Length: 192
Image (cartoon, rainbow, N blue to C red; front, side):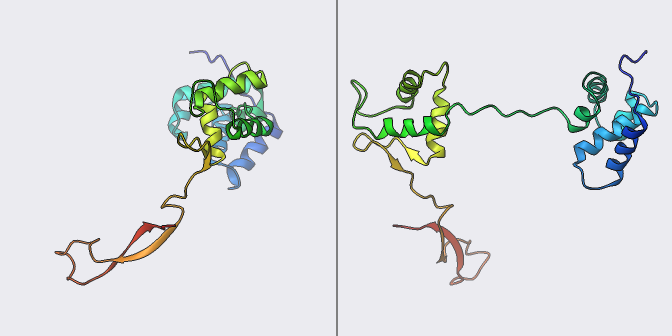
């Protein structure tokens, strides 16, 4: 089968690939990509490269294609893992907190729900789209909880994982394995 994407490295690129392969300063993924490019440049078949590098044959084909279409540096760096831009920036978070803490409750409701907050933020900040999950994650990040019907907002209580104390207990291990009266340690949430 005739290969559609041929890998031909310049002398400079070949030296860079060999440098990546010989030094341990690079990630395993980058070393694998460099190894694939070097073997493809030397004329190996995709099946043999996949076996040597322990990748799928399709991954080797895609690396060849990326090398031809996007270039050497992009191929070595890998596929860009772009992070989405934050929908709620600092100003929007401050507005969210102001809405929650305001004494104005939504019409016909005792308290704010996440979906009501989403609708209010979309209207106030003129956002095209905003998910209720984004509002929930923002509240969680700010360590806020919508609370109950009496209070509007409060800080989350610390959990047992974040505030451990050690106590002694004779019931935490089975009596068959240990003698009676032996003590072992276990975790309990700190009471405040």
